[in-house]
Image 1 (spheres, rainbow, N blue to C red):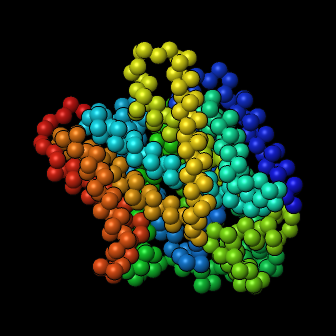
Image 2: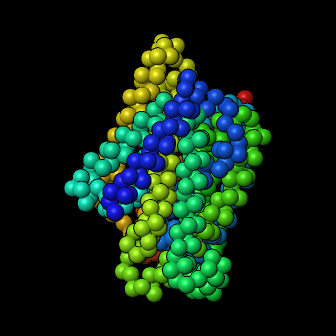
Length: 482
């Protein structure tokens, strides 16, 4: 079985490299950073599904159903509200200012230190988050293939990062827009086919399985207990602001949107993407319910993030194993390719000032960009190895906790900049942006003991609010030209 999985992995990777060769011909800086502003909006919308879901969603959302049931759908509804804010508030501003890195806005609005702080928080959050998304996929492939061959986990991680480097280092966004489309297709096919196979093994048709799930204990959408992390309003509010922060204030997600030829196309992309994402997340929850029903019937011990892999590889047919692995690999690459490209963009534009520097030739800039790209890949490797030695049952929970802490300052900075014209003391902005998440971290760890209250995704909103209030405290009223 290990050999079959490895062959599937190699063939899929070769297909990606074929697309890379076609799309990276005559690639230049504009291709890498902006896709030459020629990406078709419908291709971007479809491909962003794979980039948004990733391996964490592929494994963790189904595994989460036992704990949260279908309450996650309220969070997805919150996502939809957040996408409306992105489409009609944030993107018009990004296009108006013709931004390559969205954090350049902070320089224009507040100043040097705010700009660097915002970009630094993105780099921190994306390094931690993207590495986590990659880890959950790599660990499955390692356990079922590379471990059996005696290959160390660390070497397995290096292999994957090397492959991702090779097909992203030249083409950048121009390549990723098309490879994400392919990967989204395979991921969704794997989702539907695995659901059908589980239903068949339980003696149900596709519709019969859906009917059975709809009458099960898992089909619960609303939790009214305000002290619970799953409370309905926490899910909606948290989902909305998680979406605004992790998509609208995230260079990786916005870089793809900004590769559309104009604002109108980008808005179509965002609305279409949000509607598709709603349906896809519902299908993942249906799959999760089917997995737990299968688990109960067959006495499987695995739970959480491990359940899907155990059922697909060890309990269903060999064909199901291959389909699962294809879906898993399809979830891996979008987690890393866009992250590496966006981190390289943020660092080159925000910290190395590529747009303003005249002392470097285009060839020298490309050389520097390549080394930055490689450095982030090595950083990913170190973070993934750290996760390996500090495993957690529900990694999607960890992902959103990281986002709540690291994206809060970005939420506060952009909200403050767009909602008023006050002038901040730019040198004090880094201090405010460190204090706010630090306070939230302490509250999150002690709220149950102190207030009998459990934070969920609304912690991000509190983080952004504290940042906003801190910025107000260090600001003064002054009319700005922006």
